[in-house]
Amino acid sequence: MPQQPRLDLLGPQRLAQQRITHQIDLPHRHLARAGVDLASVEDLYQQRSGLAGLSGDNDLRRVAERDASGDPTARRALDVYCHRIRKYVGAYHAVLGRLDAITFTAGVGEHSALVRERSLAGLEPLGIAVDPDRNDAGDPARVVSPDGSRVAVCVVPTDEERAIAEEVAKLVGGASARR
Image (tube, rainbow, N blue to C red; front, side):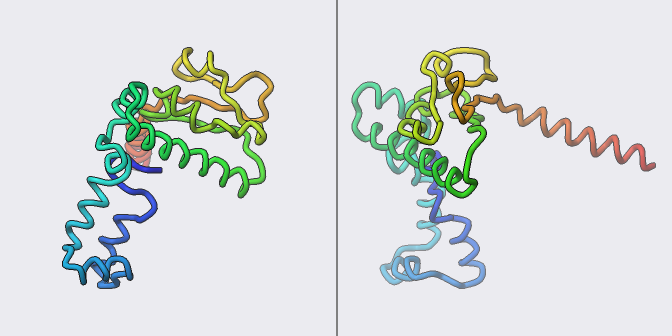
């Protein structure tokens, strides 16, 4: 996925690891020979690529607003973003042989009906569909696929703070029991 400010497939962490082990791969050697500072390349990978590099903005809500107003740069960024999700869904379907459910969660997954709709468009032959009415409104946790779909498309709210608190409580409770 094109992350908000970062690339996904080039792996900026890989560049940092290569700098530590002094194993710079061919593209990075070419950049170094051209006089490009590898710290600048790492900054480019980490801060000015991905969605931000495609659209000039790392907030998908603003990119969607610009797309709706006819901005072709925002349209291209949103198309790439949704295409990558569709590609991963198809790849997982192929590897697993079937899918029971697709879950959208976190900021974009929970709050962008547009991304859910466009990301899964064209996957109907795989049993994947989005019901427009369910997708646009409903409880925070809901199924947005039509009744009878082979694959359930779900929206699941994220509560990371609660999950962390519960795990800490288990650890602390277990530590108390061992004393």
